[in-house]
Amino acid sequence: MKILLAPHGTRGDVQPAIALAVALRARGHEAKFVAPTNSVASIRRHGFQAEPNGVDLEAIMRSNGADPHSVRWLTRQLIDTLAPLFDAVAGASATADVIVGAGAQIPAASVAEWRDVPYVTAVFCPCAIPSSEIPPPAFRTQTLPRWVNRLLWQAGGPAADLLLRSAMNRGRARLGLRPIHDPLSQLINGPVIVAADPDLAPLPDDRPKAAIGTDAWILDGGDDIDPHVDAFLTLDPPPVYIGFGSMIPTRGTALAELTLAAVRAVGRGAILAGGWAAFDRHVAEGDDVLAVESVPHHLVLPRVAAAIHHGGAGTTTAVARAGVPQVILPHLLDQYYWGHRVAALGLGPRPMPVELVTADIVADRLDTALNDPRVRGRAAGLGPAIAARNGVSAAVDYIESLA
Image 1: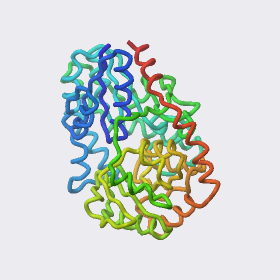
Image 2: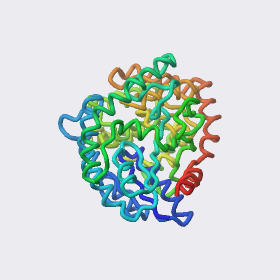
Image 3: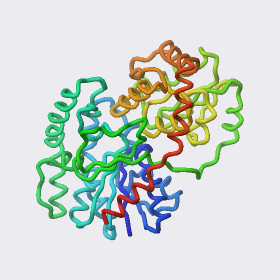
């Protein structure tokens, strides 16, 4: 069977798709990718054919005027990328028996309809599907009454459909497909795999009927640890990990500096992963600070005392698997859900929106993460159970059933 994987998003959307591709290959299937231009090289390093989808998300996030905190800006970017995504997925799909989308990949469902092959979309947080338990990802507050959450979904779905309708139907017309009235609603109410750990992110009871759940998709192995990182991790007491992934904060390097100040205030060293914001190029190293572009989470996180991060699905799951406490400073969208879940499970203190943090606030929360025995115990106790789970096999079973 030939499967086209079409993730569109950051590393948190692409890396789980690579994990799925590895599992598909192990079952004897052929997996290939059409993916963001900035992700193609990393996919090819795992031995998969990958074609660029014409959108360099890293360049967009780093561009002048980028404002990922703005729903209006995010919506505009989504609309502007629909045309290149239509063209790229259509071109890559000629031999596909099944198409699997992930992240902000919307046109792939229409391409699958055009090719007359099954389609499934993968999401990595239950806040991406309608329910009364969780508000839509554009809303920060996670403790709203169930009826309010349901109302927000009922109002937000048609609004999103209205914004996307014209651009989607232009792309569909180029494929000779009839126009549709509700492109996003059809997608999230169609076949969906919610790939998220059931302890960290349980599926809502009133989810759409076509949504199924698997454990998170984990990409095991394949990385080496840099000797400098390895040596730094031998600090006593262990250092704190700081990383904000693909986020590029409006406060720039001030965020890196204040989190480093917070770590120093509690008497720890810090290993700082620069990410897309390239903090590692702008932060002075010292005996207690090591700045690098990125680190293999599965090798580094089990050896740190705690992690300060943005609350992306992949990073939150990786820290939880490592069994260490975490301090989440959410920037946008599903990161507020993950911050809420970490606090609710006792894996870390309550989150603080990144634009509100100060060094003192981060130091206070980090002190709780490091020194509250309930937090440390809960993180250490739940970690092995989460680390033992990987949902890729169940996902392959489901994809095989579609075909």
